[in-house]
Length: 322
Ligand SMILES: Nc1nc2c(ncn2[C@@H]2O[C@H](COP(=O)(O)OP(=O)(O)O)[C@@H](O)[C@H]2O)c(=O)[nH]1
Ligand SMILES: [Mg+2]
Image: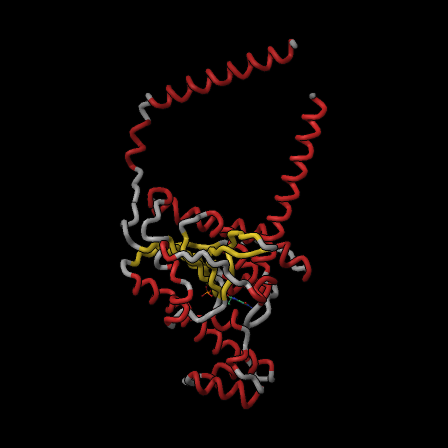
């Protein structure tokens, strides 16, 4: 009894000391420095794209022995980090990731942080980075790859005033992965066949896409179009209602598709027009086995089990009390 009285008095004293401190702060002569803070608000009614990019990932990938030119696990880790960002902000219409970068498209009407640029950009970068660290073991433990040093990501926000500009932005990023991946796939196959890095570079100098396709096919029997979609097209993340065990559930789903043509935008009209949301559940198909989906389902199951445990202990408590 005495100790709980002491505790209450102590808490009261602590609170009064704090409120005295904060009112003293408010009156301090140093207060004026706040006026130096500048706040940039992102233009209203524009799409806001926040793109993060791994810093010095050429080295990071080498140090962590990522497979060349594509490391499926590393890409899945990027997707898990992208999913975490999408779960945090319900105003993101679409996420798009390739290589060491991810773009997050905030809706025109997004009001997150009152559209304060610094807040938004720094929060997305820090959440993405911590999520990348958080999910690392889940992906790389099986390969016994330990993190040798902390990765970091820069971020920028770019505004797009029209839907066409936004589509062109995403097309630009997807065209980029196509150009790089075709080059890298051919380059690393040439190196694997015995050419030195500089000879492989020379061999590819001035070649067109069709030449690289031809080298891949005639020299290595590879039909580039049969390479995995995730390497050729990157990963699109969309928030969707999915039917799992006959129940509808909101999930961030990975989609591996062409987004340059119109078909994608017809299939997913809710990206550009929020009101176009369909009531039909999205069919996951074989993407059910994607780490991004498996993780969300696991969390959902754990939460449900936790709730059940809580309900059981609550009802035990109630029975004990009566
Ligand atoms: N081995 C490997 N490297 C990758 C992979 N994805 C991205 N990278 C590396 O990450 C780099 C990303 O490009 P960029 O951002 O321009 O280079 P940075 O400035 O070093 O981060 C690529 O040039 C690759 O070296 C991958 O799946 N496997
Ligand atoms: Mg980078």
